[in-house]
Each structure stands twice: as C-alpha cells, then as structure tokens.
Image (cartoon, rainbow, N blue to C red; front, side):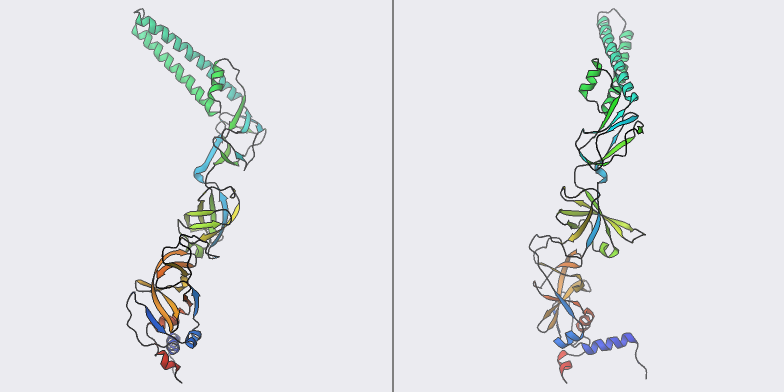
Length: 385
C-alpha cells in the first residue's frame, strides 16, 4: 500500500480537523470562520487579548526588549585641557570623575619655559611701546615737513611689527590661563612666575587626569579630558532578535532615571558575543546617570493613536496587501482587517474593527488559515456522528 508524502498527509489531516465551505475572499472584508470549541481545542489554537493604553501614554512593554550597557560621554561634549608650556607637575588639584567648574585649577606645573614666555612678552611689549612713541614723533615731524615720507613709513612698519610680536606673546599667555589683568600687570612691572596652572575650559565632569606629581610634560600635551554638562549617551548591547525590534527614534526607559532616545544602530556585530551596539541619548540631563555606570533599559511603547490597540505581533496575518487578525467570537473566529502601526517589542499597535479585550489567536494560526481558504467540510457536518 502506498501512502502520500508527509506534507500531503498533513494537509489531509488539517482538512479533517477544520470545517468550512469554500468562501469568496475580498480585501478589507470581515470573514467568519465557523469553528466549534472541540475543533479549536483539537487544533491547539491559543488566544491573547488586545489591550488599550491611555491616549498619549508611552509605557514600557514588559520584558520584550531589555538592553544593558554603559553610560559614556558624548563625543561632541569632550574638551581637552593642555599644557601651554613644558614643565614638571608640582601639584594635582582634581581627580578623575570629579565635577569641575569653568576655570577650576586642574594641575600646576613648574615651568621655566612659561617664565621665559612672560619675559619675552615684557620685552616685546616694551619694544612695541617705544616703536609706537617713535612713530608718533615721526608723524609730527612729517606733518611739519622736517622729515621725508620714507622715514615716517619706516616708523609705521616698525611699530606694526613690534605690536604684532607683542600680541603674539600675549595670545600665548592667554592660552596658558593668564587673564587680561595679569598680562597688564606684567607690562606694568610685575615679576614673571614659573608656575603654570592648567585650568578647566568648560564646566563638566573630569573624565581623565593621567598625570602625577613629578611627571615631566611637554608643551601641548593633554593634561585632562572633560565632558561638558549636557545629555549623556548610553552604549547598549542588543542581540540579533532584539535589533530587529529596534529603530532609530525609539524610546528606552531607565528605571527611575528618565528616558533615552535611540540615535544609532550599529551595522555590524561583535564577533566575540554576536551582539550589536545600540547608542541612545538622554532626553533630559539628569544627575542619576553617571559616566561609566552600568544601566538596564527597556523599550517603551510609542503613544497610541486614536482607536489603536496593542496586540501581540504573532497575531498579525498577511494576505495579499492586507493585514488581518483572527478574533474569537461565539461562532468561532473572524478574520478582521487591521492597519498596523508602530512596533513595541513583541507587540504591535493596530487599528481596526476590534475592541479592547478582544481575544486574538496567537497560536494555531496554520489551522485558521486552512479554514480561511476553505479546506475541509462544513463544521456542522463534522459534528454529526
């Protein structure tokens, strides 16, 4: 005796389980699938409710997508503090991960080069002042016709060069942290100091301070790295399954620390653990998130639009260009057309002729699809002995 192949036998078994006459299907139409309670149980059909959320509410979607990661400083918020001149670290005023204000002292260097820069400024400033005085005298003599034009033009050029040289040294002093009052005091006769204090250029958190007392630093060497105040980033790890549920713009909830918005999804995975990086940014700066802290974030469902319900993604069935759900009623199930919206983890916002609390099929959909296409005989006929 010859038996048909297994797929064919499965189709025959499905036809024997499900009853229903051949129906004419049309898009956007509600189709009744008559099934008895015995048939539903035999086919292993399981349902789950459609739920509503308050209008405008954004809520976590349970344990559907839970990501873990580390708080980091945004790349565009990092500021370097550098040594304007070489020297030896004499004192360290701050420590890493400490909050600092703009202008706060970070490190003090003993720098003969810094003292030499101040001495050069005093010398060039004096020369500039003398050149300006000479130019003024020559301008007066030229106006009286005592000297030639060439001589006064020579005085103008010399005064300009002397002023540029003094301004250049003054700019170096400002870069090293000297204010206008301190620079003016040097011109007035104050003594140059070999102590160079490196200060914070912006308020924020001191991320790195890799220097120690007695260390030799060169001019232009980075002394500290500061993260400016503002929203922080969280770099999270997501599995391949979780990545399929995420998109740029999604909201994540950190327990008692506000919300994050996804700003980037990595196109590649880590070969060691097969996870991909997800970058999210705080919506509002809050002190509860600290740099280098380990956090857990959950995907947040977007606000429901009018008439939208949250249903399990497994309940959605596609036929042609339309989407349907199978809704339980007294006579079996109805194939109800719906319009899907935003995804929320393993759930989905939909709009259609379904009410909150309606029971939707989430398992045993193969049996329902078979009944939908008209396999088997009428349910009433199957119930007869």
